[in-house]
Image (cartoon, rainbow, N blue to C red; front, side, top):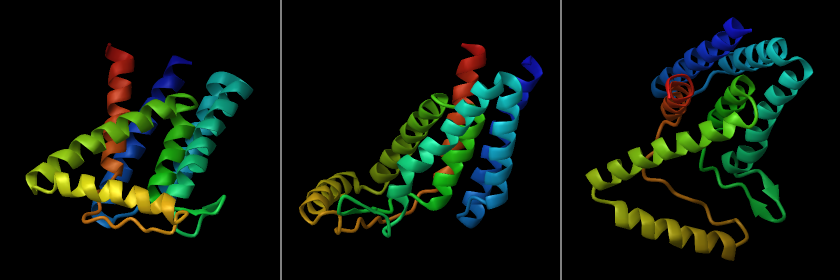
Length: 181
């Protein structure tokens, strides 16, 4: 059992590193990595926890996809509000397969850490380029337009940030904290 848990950790670290490198090089999270993560996550968590392990693994897969799908597409619409395309579909796949590996509710810790690391990087980048105040003003202006126009106000970003490296950092931090602190 202990060996299988370590294989889950190793799989999450290796696959998130592969996705980070792929995202940096090609701006894509490969479908093969997604499939491998889902199969490894569900299989190993089933072996560890039986049906309950399979259920938590599937919840870890499905919940991030349901949460982030509206954020990844302008074609998505719910209650009259369109999707806002603030993350890529690769990020949705990435959170999905990491969720299958780390299971529900742990995926939410990974997501939280990912956004913390991404926010720190973004603030440093905006400070470096001296555009922090400008981007904050734009964000609040966009939010007002988004709700005023029922989600038809598109967000325009000045720079696309690769998100997969922050997922790798989050997975690493999660397991470092889990095993050593």
